[in-house]
Image 1 (spheres, rainbow, N blue to C red):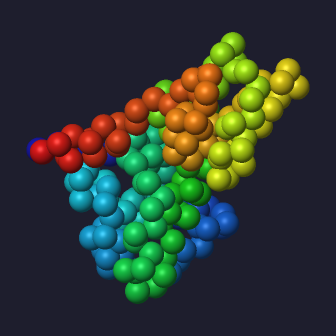
Image 2: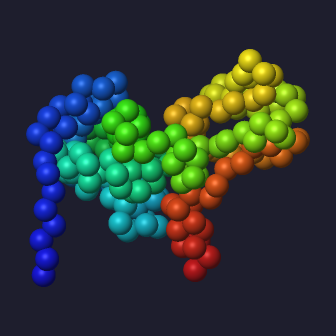
Length: 187
């Protein structure tokens, strides 16, 4: 048997709760209803919303913000209707994503590598504005050179722009959680 030692960040829970959307953390009493309703948790047993809440409260900042599990939440919000406290777990995950980026636990380039953000290949972009028109969140923009640009910190990795780009100038890597979910569905 081995012990896993971690350095606790005592103010981490308060830091998460202070961010917009993070206040939901204070309403959660860890009943586990979210974990039972989470489609990702059903397919990837290592992903457990209740466990993530516990990790925040225990101050496991570095361990949580460096974990690939942090990026598995699909934002489907299936957890909200079953929660007796109306906790928006997806909002808490958004706060964690923001903190991971701000604190340098992950870079914008790593988001693209992990398949959590689409990227425009500038040399292939024909500036047709299709990506700008089809994105439901208005994330693609046209830069000073007339080429589309997607801010990786804002991208939802939905793949709509990738599928609609007539020049095939936008790429989105397959994310590990998507690979695991696909493997689960094949069985």
